[in-house]
Length: 119
Image (spheres, rainbow, N blue to C red):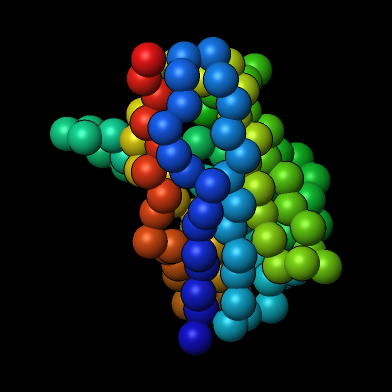
């Protein structure tokens, strides 16, 4: 079955950096577009970044495009999120997500990793 396992979250000071990783298994990783979402307490889940199946055309939420970088390694079945210049408002649970490319379309989710930005 599809499994997405995030890692790399933690506590970081404002201005710091973190690199999140997502290990994927149970599906043909190289055919799925991958995304990172986040959900802060009391807020709806929001899209952070998306990358196509072959690693092209990454898209970012406006508030993150200059600070975050999404990448993937299809040989390792992994997707990453490099986060720089972190702000307290980046505090959230970050989720890895995979979008099935063929009907019936379905989005799969990992369990999430907590990122806390605080001094």
